Amino acid sequence: MKIVIDGRLYSQSGVGRYTQKLIKNLAVLDKKNKYLIYLNKDNFFSFKPPAKNFEKRLIKGACLNLKKRKIKTSFSILKSLIKDVESFYSKEEKNWKPEYIKVLREMV
Image (cartoon, rainbow, N blue to C red; front, side, top):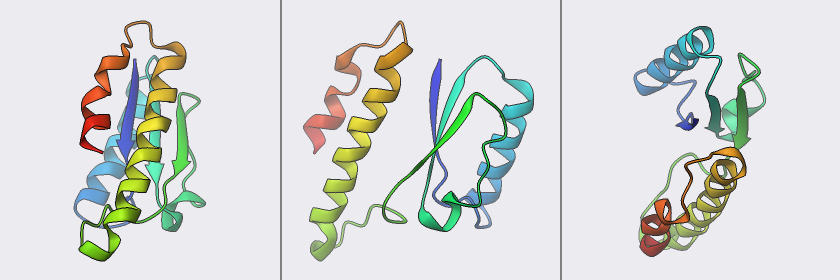
């Protein structure tokens, strides 16, 4: 199975600390599944995937911002994320069906 983790807050306390511990423990416990960690530029270069079944991707922007002046940028980020996630899953996932991502596409 392939699993995507939002690591944009990786270096912060709270959700970031939870994400750090989650990734650390998954690397020890799970060698079977593949993990894709999305990180912002603050964390991307310092983050080292903890195992061979982990890969990282850079995402622009810290979080999706839905303020009026930034809505276009947020949707652009979301569209590229959808393409990337679809590509990640469709390559090797046997049970992948394109309709899984249809709802996300309709939202954007």
